[in-house]
Image (cartoon, rainbow, N blue to C red; front, side, top):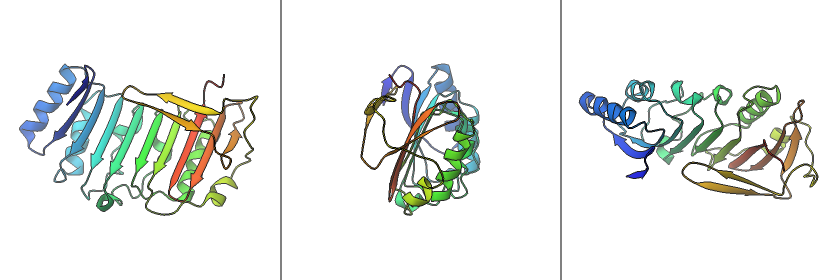
Length: 214
């Protein structure tokens, strides 16, 4: 169950006494990186209550319920947020506003993200919001993403070896991953010179920010 002193994986059942003890345990042990699988019977209010009382930097959540979780605001402020949904839970983030995320790393698996959601998110960043952002990953999306719609909304260019490395490597508290260049990737530059790369596939998207280019 334990991954390190400051990280923990757990299930939280809907009983009041259990929630109270779990919250106390996590806070007392200064858990900052939580992997959590809420019971499918927990309500949005139950999940919100747990999150409101935790002091987290990173949350990895596995959810198989059918509650609409898009109204929960607490997790949009976390440094790293990872949603892993089952196929039957694909609509549980309907109405999601990606621009509310103010953290560093956002991962969305089995969600129902639209192409215009991606455009709004990138445009939000291009307008100098959330300069902390490092990575957005959309994986196994419910609907197809329109690469042309997303890319034509911005002025993009090919990779320039003089501006950034070929590969993007990101180390996280629990894992690390590499983003290797693909010939269909496109780069874009914000007004302040910040460089980003977009990769769009029918049901997958990577948007990475090059905070340290060399």
